[in-house]
Length: 242
Length: 242
Image (cartoon, rainbow over all chains, first blue to last red; front, top):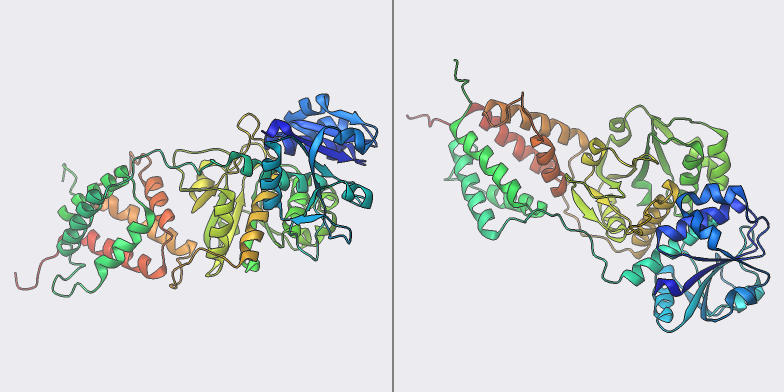
C-alpha cells in the first residue's frame, strides 16, 4: 500500500533538505520521491543529509512541472502551515494519514510539500484534494521541511500499520493466584517483622495491593519478591563463620 | 502544563542537532531544554539550526550529570529505538504523549533523548519510568535525533491540546531523591537479610528498580516501604510479653 504513495517536493531551495526528506521518508517506509524543479539536484549535501536513505535520491524522479509529478495520481494531499481562503478540505495530520492510506487502496496518491520559505503556492494548493495542517505553536509554527514531512509520514505509517501494537514484555505475567499467594506471604511477613499489627490492620494491605497491582508484575518478579519475603521472615542473616 | 515538561538531551555529539532539537521543541510549544555534557555547546552551528528557536538555546541548562538534569522530576520518559531486556513500560509515541501530559499535571516530567549514535545507555534507560519507541521502518529505523524528538513533541502537543490525559492519583508523587533513598535502603536491607550477596549482585537491583519504576510510586507509598524495610532490618519482632 505504501508503494502507492509518492512524496512530491516542489521547488526545494536547499539540497540538504531534500536529503533530510529522503531520510524521513525511508524511516517511515515511504520510498518514492518526486522533485519538481529543485534548485540544486543532485547535490552532495543531499546525499550527506540522506544518510542511509541515499538510495531514494538515486531513484528520485526529477520533474519539470507539478503536472508531470502528479501524473497518474488519483488523490493529492498537500501540506500547509496556514489556512487559505481557497482551501479544499482541511485535515489534521492524523486524519490526513488515514485519508491518504484509504485512498491508496484504490489508486496512486501523492503527498505534496511546498518550498521551505513559502510552502505551497495558491495554484499548487488548488491541485490538492485536501490540505493537512500540523497543529504547531502559533507563536512559532516554523517547522523545517523535513520535520513537517516526518510528522505526516509518521501518521501515514501509523494509518497503514493499523494492526501495529505496542510490544509487550516477553516475560509471562503473574496470574491472579501468583498475586494472591504473594499478598498472603507479604501480610504474614509484615506481621512477623512487627510492621503490621493484625488487630489494627488499617488499610495497609489495600495500599500495597494497589501499588503492586499498578506495576503489573511478571512471574519472575513475583519469584524475586517471594524470595525476599522468605529471607525477611528469618531476619538478619548470620554469615556461617560467625 | 507544557511548562512542566523538560527535554533532556544526553551527550549530544553534533551541536547542529541541539539547534534542530530546539526548533522542533519550540514548534510544538516546549521550551525547557537541558543538556547533559554536550560535546560542543554553545556553538554557532546550534544557533544556525535553531533558526527562530535560538532563545531556547540561550536559556538551556547545561548539566554535568543526568542526575542533575533530572533533579526534581517525578516522571521520566525515554526515547528508545530498540527494545531492551530490562525495559520498564513500553509505549507508542501516542501513549507516551498522553502519559507524559497526565503525569505533568502533578509534577515535573522529563523527555530523555540519548546520543545520536547509540541512543540511551542501559543505565539511562533504567532511570526512565517508560520508554517510547517510534514504530519506524525495521529496515531503516534510523531517525535523526531532532526528527524523533519532533514526533514525540508532536504527540505531547496533541495530548495537551486534547485536554485528555490519563487520570492520575491525587497523592503527590515520589521525587527522584525519594526513590534514590528508597533503593539505597532496599539494597542495604537485602544484604542484611541475606538475600543479596554484595559480591555477586547480578542484576537484582536493576530488576527491582524496573518494577517500582513501573508502578510510579507516591510519597506515602515510599514512606510505607521505608517503614517495612526498617522493620525488616531488625528481624522478627518479639511481643513485649514474651
